[in-house]
Image: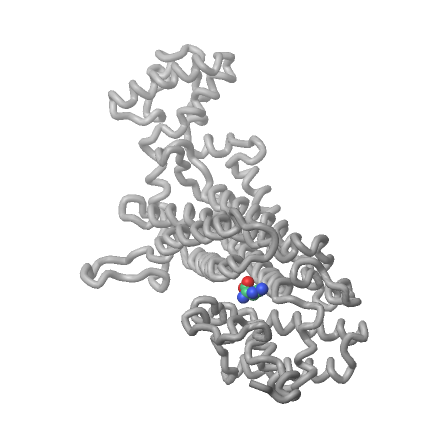
Length: 471
Ligand code: ARG
């Protein structure tokens, strides 16, 4: 069939359709489309295209007039997407094609010049880096909010004492503030890890083109400056096949969720009748459809449950890359759904956990009741003997026998008389009772990083300073 020369010069319906004789099968269009999830990258796609168009004009690859037409068209598209009037077309596969095709329809030939010296391979890398840079910064800020919640709790319950556990058995008394600041440290490391990942997210990939770079006279540094990237990627092949920055983020984010899960487990335990260490606000719990008396800790339970999908998403990405030859492969399109899910899940979990902590009360009477019965100052007695020059292993055995005696008599260590104590070691004197008290035990832990009031006050001060909270 002969076609007019006008038709010959027209771009095909599909932007890549020139070499194809047959229409794409409907099933193939449905299978390959990603627009239903990558539409969320529209802002970043448009920002990237704006910077690219400005660069093309600066380099004389398009005219200033064409640049302005492109910028105007992109602005219109952005407003339509935000107003919900933009029509996304699955047959155009992804967000990049949907925007480019609509631009061409709006402004004509100038729109057809936008993709000069660009491939979707470097374009999608740019979009995801822009998106993730923003989300990573957002998560870092949310984590700072979570850390603040722990600092506030530490200040509120600065002098309250609670049982510290190993193996979930009562071990040694600690300050509630010390326990709270343990989480402060944990989430501080998470923030550091994300800030470090951000360095490798924040690198500008555009200009790698399909895989080999381009012969057209582009200016990558200009694009980087426009989009506020401190540097550009070094190797065009690596650039279009690299998803390490996503995996690093997902790995750091997985650890955040695992930390939240550990905290959740404690909250679930602490809200049981058996512990009753804390009370959650009614507004942060839900009830049972059958048991009228129930008040359930659903938020920590769900956060704990969601750690499965977050770690699963990380595994998906690792498996996605395994065995991929250089450079871009369509497999890589599968990176987005797990990434988006991790961003959403972890950000929401951190945010709601911060709110929940602001609505949590420690029951100090219950904490105090938890301090008896566990012989939690037994180590203090052993240390007392060490200071009287008894080798630690011998001291350990002496205290072990003392505890066994207490168990047989149903007594606490503090309930023994000096005489009874001296049966186990003659070096024991009247000053031992201070050592056996809960308060004495806590106050004695003055090693750096220990739970004494002195050390915790120092740690709290530092945390408040780091968080910009004035005491
Ligand atoms: N939707 C694709 C993705 O997310 C964009 C890149 C497609 N590139 C290509 N050569 N088909 O990976």
